[in-house]
Image (cartoon, rainbow, N blue to C red; front, side, top):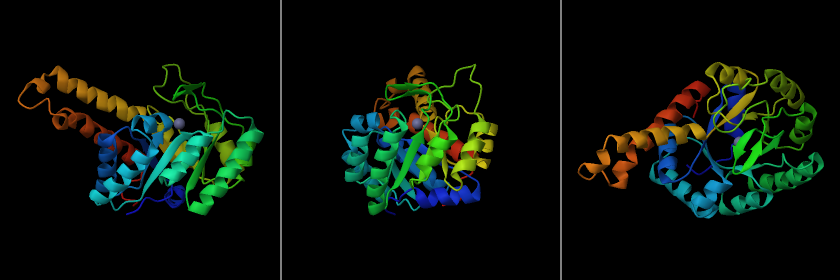
Length: 288
Ligand SMILES: [Zn+2]
């Protein structure tokens, strides 16, 4: 199956009261683990690529070529969107050119007028090419490629302004943050989420920073209109723990345990387990 825009899968999720996971990729193992799990569970999936990860993988062209080829070689039949995560204005154009099927323009750090103008322009380009576009209002806390936010709550009126431009999905800050949540984190602001939802109507909402949000909060957020949840750090932590265990147990010193295909296998399995757990919580299993 060719890569698809995230529009249809998110509209189905919104109507069916579940969420599609966006899982960020870093390399071949990551991509393979996520695609295989989505196929096994018959779940739609969004592969997220940050600008930093794109650079790490030598460029967006490499990423798009790898993902397209892998979808074909693994006979993936579930809908897969390849999505730029927190794109800059220039990064969006690079990904459109490289063959991504979805982009996020993160103009949340611009004054609202400039965010509106740039988002408008990118919407027109994406519409022409059949790509989905995610916009963000209200900076999401934590660190994302060096940009540190505090976990603000978005202004519902600004959300409406951006939603009305015709974006496919909207990320609104509701106290969520990237990375690990601090022990004194007050939790998601459902008040903000409900206020945003009331203003933006049918627009599928996106929850960033899905790592470590308690399951009951995730489910409540989905019931209030969240249709896409981003997971990144959690897969990294799962990979790290499994790889550490393999080395600490001295398995890399036994036989051909040094072979990267053996060395990286426990980490790859840990990513699969993590993605499976999330898809079950999000309710996307069997929806493809
Ligand atoms: Zn994010």
